[in-house]
Image (cartoon, rainbow, N blue to C red; front, top):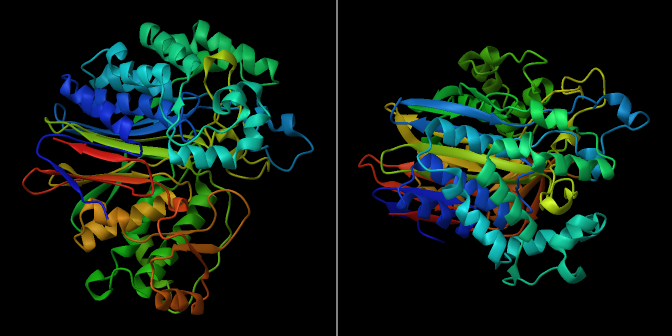
Length: 526
């Protein structure tokens, strides 16, 4: 098991070591945590292209020592003006791949601009330099990208632009083969020179729309021109003396807070970590939270979400009383995408950023916008075509979003920055990480590396399955099965568990960084 990296001044964690290095380089050049976070974000768009990219969305939690304030930035895009349910008449759901799934404006580039303008110290040219260099000269093709490319090869072959990039010479590159994205390098250079406007209102945006329209796309230049992310207040609750923060809806972040409210009703000193009781309690807690999430979550501009009720301690007590320690509850599941990348940065001044970005499914829609090198997200495919559904498709609407960066504060200062890849698995893995660090005193690396579970589906067929890693003792698995859990034992360090990261600040101010052994990540501190 890897050891937690401890820094005395700064810390960067991400699911790819080159992105972590990019963030550290920016810090050493005099940038702050916000500059470094944008550098990491852009670099991930290059070196983890199956997980994230310029055609996707992002959510951010930021803490500035200057104004001593935690804020959230919602970098998710809205559906197009012309995107209505009538477009999909005769279909039961929006296709999850292909051009029909490209119906929301990508929000990530806008979020870079917002973060840097509000808090950054360096220019966009300086911050994007590492990403541009990796796209232009290439980087070692990762094992994770190789596995996902093999998995998605048929889909990538359907789009000539995607195949030209991700299947050079009509084949999947070998692990550690140099992988170059020349078109993406040119796109990043254009954004570095001309800023967000080039993407949303300039020639670059027009080229994106032109190519998508040629493929039958519904997004327009007006959709891009109208896009703007939103600074907002995070939502929060308390847990064991810490103030826990999440991004508000349309993020599913409130699910993570609800889970902690329920678990606070239990004395973990009498529950052994890794035992049947531990796994059963967490799974049953999260199922109850998912029921409310599935019922309420959508764009709050379109439908009221009763957060006061959902985040109240009294409501949590009521749900805690419904949990039976000898019986599993079955609830309805739904499809939630799994491709995501979380990262976090703390700088020498104590500024902190926890952010997460995504294309939704692996390689998103599988559609690349011509010679821009940008693969478009399929996030809009999560809208419902049922007119009575709270998350029904409507023009200019943000969909139910899985992205949920998190922070925990102690005594008014950042204590833990944490998050993970994995759709439905995000609130599950976050809850595991928090309980292990706060209740059981684990460092971030141990909390991430110990065996994990994921209940339900990330995307694909509906299932009540409880996937659990093979390192969990057989006796515990047998107890879970006896209680009615549909247990599926998976690999010892299985990628279905997602790629988690965390930074914890100890009482001396030292920074402890942990990254997922299931990823290609690195924690870099100094």
